[in-house]
Length: 282
Image (cartoon, rainbow, N blue to C red; front, side, top):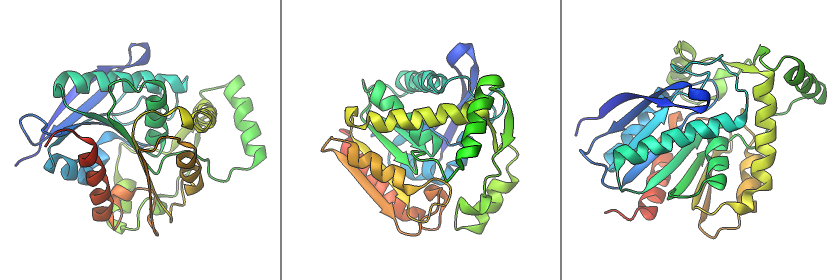
């Protein structure tokens, strides 16, 4: 069955017009809908393998380019408040519900998007069937105390001050073709404002502190070879989730973008098994 796709426009926090996109293969999603939130510096069209896998199984996917990313407006790599991301996700969730109808709705987020959807699910669990976090940004990579102090100062005096994070593109995947695709993508950037860095730091702390408040089923997976986001943050979070319906999967040697890594078929098998077990649709 051919893959259909359609662009849309979502109204986010402050009235910002965000670029949205949706994919489906069935005329109507049989098993459910997935609201997908991408990671830092990228955009929603970088999930082709994952979209193919879940739409083949009868799920529709709804996504958007976060503010300051991809085809959405906003200063690259900047956010005034982390809560703006949550308002934007609420717009995505509302749109997915309106279009997909009465089917189970799941949240999926990768890296920074993983942090966003976990925080969202803790705050707004109503109508969410489950949440999946892929290599979630739940622990900062080793950053010197001096650099953190400078970032905190800049976040106060010039919050939109932008620096290049110099993200190591070789660390996103063990597949050289995926590394090249990332490096050649004109919509990808590695810019981050001082305010974004501090908002992310606060969001990480809040999400860990409120892990026990999560009340929707959760799947968290991470690659043991991730050199961009420390796996220890994911391990600590899932340990503090008190729900019995939680699943933690660690992929040996997997790099940061498991959906674009060498063993992505095993990742999708895990993801689809979890989705199917939590969808009440045949």
